[in-house]
Image 1 (cartoon, rainbow, N blue to C red):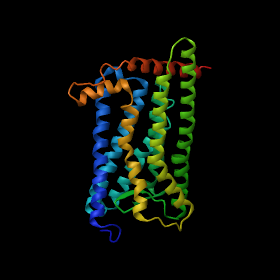
Image 2: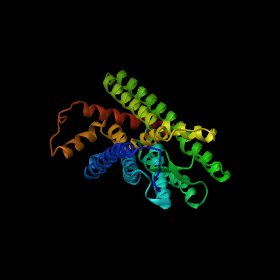
Image 3: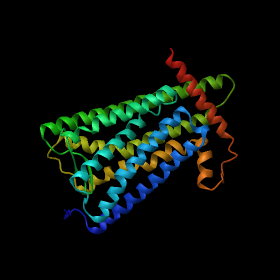
Image 4: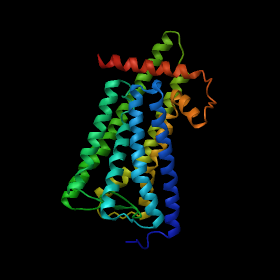
Length: 315
């Protein structure tokens, strides 16, 4: 039924436009990532497996989460019924959790075994912890301005609370800890590689700064898109009497769903080698960066990092 008193129809329309833009951009960018990687053999490296899997997850979130939310927001109420709410909530949580976990694996997935293991583990983990509400442990309910669904953070039912607490710590807190550890390790490895190359007479100061900058952008984008949602959920879990204005509660939801756009830009288009193939695909063969001499230097650094991490595994 139509929700009265939450937003005016104009307000819902504005939200629909915002989500529609993010959803379509997310779909186009992630399809581009998948198509370009599949078409060019040079891009089929261990790191690319994880990045393509990330693109698939973001695509799923945009298609099964962003588009339905765009439609229901335009209508001013959730028009897909209880079954639609459960399916939409499951899809967004499932693909969103996959994306969240991949943020914590960027520092490790440069070796084939780690790439494959990381992809498989993330899918199994997300499936295991997002299916219980389909069978009665926990539930999916409307959130924010009632145009999208999510795990039910508000119910104080014993079964629902036990699921939510487990879900929060295993699907939010644990991946967040992994993110801190993995990025710290990656920065340390990069620092060691740079010291080695400088001692051998080379200079990678520019590349080190570029990669370090990309890592900082990755972490900041993750924090901006996911942490507000996690904080809101935790606040509701800890204080059942807490009232959050529906419009305010919608902001973290939209931020989280907007990650489908940021991820392919940050993780993929800041990769010079991939950009060398993606830009001509979009511009019908033109590539303004075709003569960029820094590409080979970047690839050398990535190769060095891979070699160093392989060595660390056998220590």
